[in-house]
Image 1: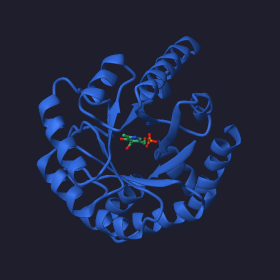
Image 2: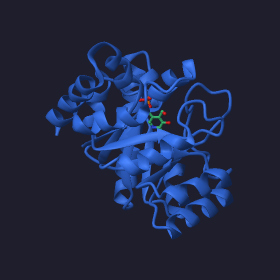
Image 3: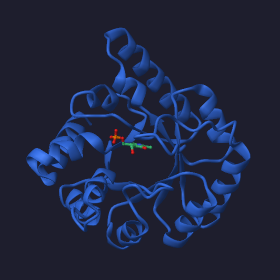
Image 4: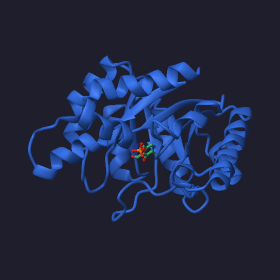
Length: 239
Ligand code: PXP
């Protein structure tokens, strides 16, 4: 199991003051030094945290794997083709949301997604689709020729009783199996923390998890290097 770290919150803190620090590019380097397998950043249309300068510098400095999360728009497509990240994760984006609220509605956006995926892949950029744990999303990902799916774990992370937790885990497990059987690389993320990550690590088809909020939050108290090491020790001890 690999761990990719989303560093958007470091940029959120920088933007709270409109200053130069803390710099998400430095955060990415610390995450890599602590052993992270990849760096994720979400360039939003409104540039509320990560900006164009960050993405370009991250492309130059990230040595592991740079996953650019973005909406399937022409503007973002142009930036991705210019900087050539190691992976593009396509996500739905709403202006007012605090964070990505759900997976892609593949069928409602099929033609646009087909065009964007085709153009990214023509530049040899692999594409991941952020999807809810629903079987129809796997059919959509296969039809659109995506190489990777990232299963949205937010509903699982927000579940408040045992029954809901088990229901969500079983959905994630069966979607992971279905996707893996069809040859897709399976990853997962959203809302995972030092406690709720354990059952996700037991789903053998999931090859990588992507975590931002809980690691950056812990880093405020422990320092980023230690926060990454703490998560890695959980991730590595499981598999
Ligand atoms: N994966 C995707 C597609 C996301 O949009 C986010 C949040 O930016 C994450 C993973 C990480 O979620 P969290 O910050 O809750 O760990």
